[in-house]
Image (cartoon, rainbow, N blue to C red; front, side):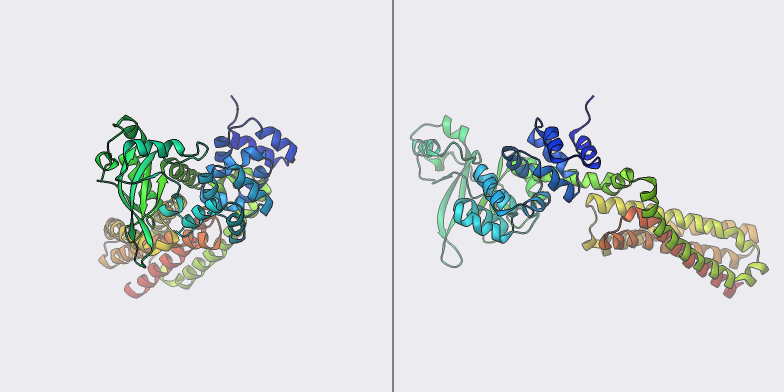
Length: 451
């Protein structure tokens, strides 16, 4: 059974294949398969593969990529390459690519392809990841007072080479906030409904006026949910004032979301994990050893804490019996929290922007768990030592240690991500070290004060 194209491409890049070999590898592959393979690669690798594509295929592949990856590639193209790509693409696809291009490239498109540039500029006016970034102003506009015969003539007169959404929108002109002429959405109907109607009927009699729309500033996920729920092929996008600014074709939206989910999945199973898998034993050791050395130095701090309280350990030897238990329980809490945080960061469920909410939630969870486990371990300590004070020391120390582990397990992956390190590599070692230092310090300090 043949390997997936992504694996074969990765192997070719790893073995240092030249451009001719890459072209041979890709020559018989379909554009959607190539696009999926490119989404899995690192930016530099992605550009190498794109350069090896035949010109006719390159444009189609570019339109099938998610915005992030498309932008990375567009920024590496020469101006003449960019112009040729736009000229060979259907106008709607060309606008999708141009919206991700640098300003000087868009300026060239304004001279050579003004309609494409106008569509791209409307999209580029909205934030990345918004519904407006995916809408097009190239759609069939009808007037409510039109007859079916007039509307069908308009459809027939449309350039067949221009890819326009299949739904037809009835619009009227209205004055905008600054007095400019804007479009107001009046209704929608499908080409099929138009073709089956009597020639003399008015569009106003056929169109649906109870329409589902989306704000152009809304997240594209919201638009995807509406398209999926209502089974639409297109979705009208309105501005803040309620005027129609474009429509979002379902196929454009879906391939963007699929590309995004594919990249999130790749990160979840591990772009870092894949890099580690591809590394030689020496390379893997070089990546991991610095973090372990840092942990070792921090753990020496825990050793100094224990040495400082050596007298109390000698007087109450039972304390030493509970130290491994506290360390192990807190360590597992930290590892659980770190694993949950790393997974959430990679899948997009938690972002660095909302780290406060994630930390607060994990703190509440840990307080609940800590109260239960501290009561259990404190009870065991009381039965064992026959001393309520000793049990209190054990319970409080376990609670503090668990809380420290949870905070470190949440924050360290986020800090690592922010600084560009692999959270999976850094989270475990540092969380364990900090939890031991603070846990043992609290435990032995309380023991000294209370016993």
